[in-house]
Image (cartoon, rainbow, N blue to C red):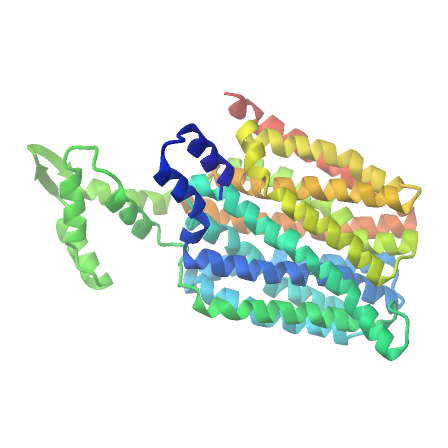
Length: 481
């Protein structure tokens, strides 16, 4: 929610006490679905941080090299790539609630399969299936949050979502490092051995299951109910046009049940005389029909998705293997590794809450592209840092910038298309994320095994520079008007 924007207005009208009161209670008046989704996002953040820290380290403890670990990191994204669009269509058909409950049950199941396996085919299969079932979260989360918020609230709510996912959820890194250390002390073995790390992966599975239980209380929301939403907006909007009030009264007089409602709508198509002016009810009803038949803006989708594909490929080349890079380069154990990435994620998540402040001063596009340009040299700094403190400093700065643009980039993309196409665009973004986070780690793992550890960071930096340049080329002129 754009708290800073509302704070500025409140400051501009110092005598407006109701406005101040509304500003202070904004977070208390969100729909219940938003709170439930944010709670599950928190659990998802814990699961992601714990599993990211421990799964690759677990594979390393089994004796696998970076090229296999890169492929293992890519498998969830490949699974998400194959399933994102079908799951998005399924969610629109049967409702988001059932799909999210399914992912809350099946994601921890396949994570546990990774923890209990040792053979390469089994690990790859479980990682693939885990990506398939977890894609439901990425497909449905942003559309649901978009539907439940106003444009004024959206950046702030997205920022809060990112804060819970990447910031508070980063505390999972602390658990991901502490649990193997705790088990290792009980068993009198090294924290880098297989059994302690296995318990870390099992903990990640448990978080997804527990935080997914409240999803049973979600209200069913179907992605295709555009006509119902538009009718509700017509009821709530002030009637500025002649005959508008008559139309609203006519709509409210329609039967409540769906079958009777359709019959009432069919009989009502015609002309309503209001204050001497003819109003065509059929033309008003056709708003929903036009929305349903609205063609997919393929060129706009391409302009949004190609830069995102490059961005996620560059991020995937670095983020997916950053923990194992610190292990191989600086010989870190799970405990210190968890502390480093807990601070990185938590501080970055807090910093993401400042996104509305930056959006007030700069356009969303300018902020996103500037951060991408600045992140590229930081990636190279991490890859070539001669000492651990310098590498940590570079990772912290990169993490801050990445979490800052997450909600801004999401809001920018969602605002480029109509309500009708937001779920589709979100599903396609899941596809580009899947491709990027499958090809990126695979290429990075190959580079780290066959060239050296640092070349993966050069590759990632190049992808970010190209992504920002394409965004400016596609949208820069429109944003400057």
